[in-house]
Image 1 (cartoon, helix red, strand yellow):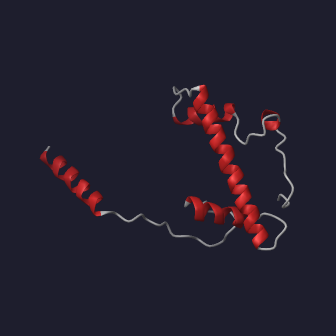
Image 2 (tube, rainbow, N blue to C red):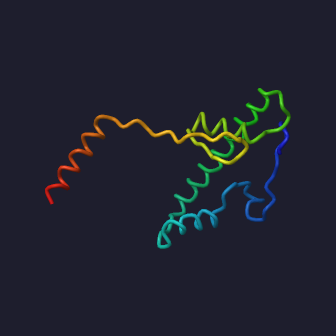
Image 3 (cartoon, rainbow, N blue to C red):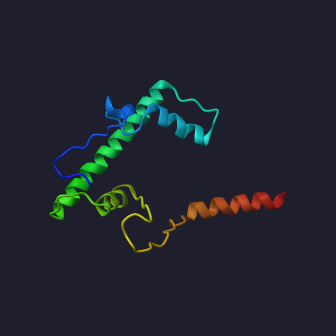
Length: 126
């Protein structure tokens, strides 16, 4: 685990020079997993790579602050999990905690219920 106050460097050849978490090649691989025919513009790739770097940087910074608050010298999985859950409403099961969390369903609004009723009514006609 990284020590607080020190910076670790990813030493893979693709990211060593740029310091990026996600490379253009990996981004293209991810896009091809969804749609093999899809191509990203150069500008879109750059923006997505920047967003990924900013996300990781903010997550690590927040995890460092949480670890510091716990008076710990190392970042633990629970620090990252707490940040992701509180700030991004993201939960990754199976990492670090033994407790099983129930799936939270979002509340259905009245407007959504009305739209569903209209759809059901339209489908019944055919």
